[in-house]
Image 1 (tube, rainbow, N blue to C red):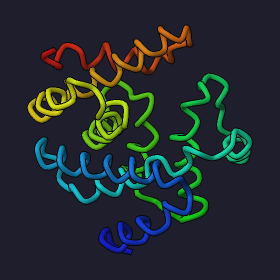
Image 2: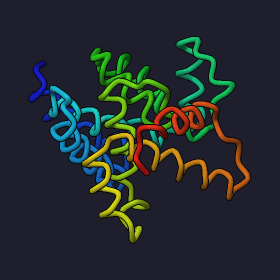
Image 3: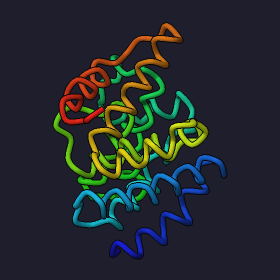
Image 4: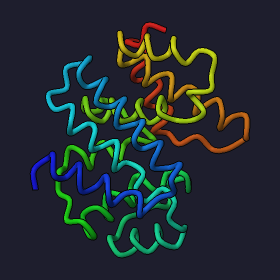
Length: 193
């Protein structure tokens, strides 16, 4: 199946996997991912769009669903906070149920929540697009400034997302995953904040 056919197929399939509002978020993420791909030199903007459509395919599955797929694939999830289950379960799910094998997209999906150091360009784009395509981000008074700054500097959007996630976790007295801290630290020097 070529990329165009995959986009058409998953645009019909994903709404069966998630709620209407979650799919709306996925569409927004896909649009931002395609836009930032064009601005920042990623070679296949439509592929970034597909990554956006797929990134939350298991977001609303049950805790048991995630644990079962992790056990089946012998994946150690003991250090993952529960809100970070879905990017990892999505990779297994897409491979198992849909025979989806694009490793570049699967990597971006896996890294869209926690981030990481030295991410691929598609990983970076999906990571920040997930935040900028969120209801939370769109309601902020600085939203247009965030978009403008990310259009100029991809690292700005990466640091912005990781910073806001860290601040929210601190406010709730929740544990911060080391990968989220590493993402913030790694990209800060090039973020021009």
